[in-house]
Picture 1 (tube, rainbow, N blue to C red):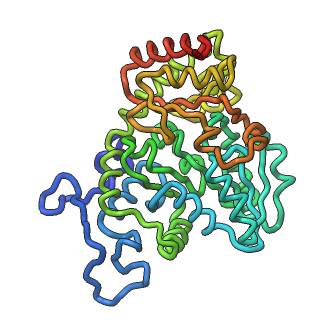
Picture 2: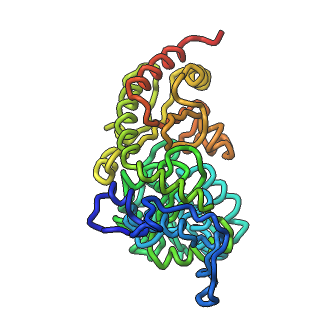
Length: 391
């Protein structure tokens, strides 16, 4: 069930759910059945089976995701990386070429550098903020261009409209990882992106209790991707589908709260003398601020920063925090803090990390929904602690 006239918050609650509800259930039940009765008609992908991603829970969640993201269709996957790798492998093959932003999540970059050459796929890395340089890298065999809405963990923002224009002019599939923005702050399909990827583990679910992924976009591309996913086996369990759908119901409430608190904390950090730099698109000095202000509904709940004391000060700061938990991942109700050099980008050589701004002392903060006043006080006392020498 969905209505294009509904506000996104209404779609988050009602889109995709069968009406009338099954046996009157307000919430779509969990169909914890591996297989379903089959009359022998239809194609292979039409057989109802968990691995084929077409149980009632898969269908309801996919319809909700498409409606919320302003896309023609959607599919859910077993993880964000399953969404990323399946989307890429459905778009390019041996002999093809693809463009990637040089600012990529560490897992994505490892797949690109370690696996694509082995499969006969060539690639080039582009500076996402310099669109005048992109066309020179397009080859006759180039099939797609892939960027992130907000890069992890340096919060850089590509010229997103230029990416869409490049795809349209050169007949390339445009792909974007929209995890950091979420559909509340930005809906890439609405400005012309072909495929939109999410780690459902993060903002979509928002409670740090499942791993999931999603791809939204053009119907024909999603059909191809679904068939590839069915062969690769990256299916999401129906119970996880249920939890992801339940988490999405509060997405608007959570993300708007996180937007507000993250901006306040970024401004606080930017004013502190012991902080040498803050990466947050809501700050006027951020290179993508004007772009984000024009396209986004909010600046997001993610920020990163560096302390004048470097790695030692970063360790003291993180050890002194009481509210944010030192843990990887992001986008949940809990505030989380980490050093990406030891988590999301640990697989990259140090020189490659530094080249994209991921220093050993860089601290990434995922802002949760705790009291903004409590988080502010905690960060202030941790900054004071970062100035004190060890011992």
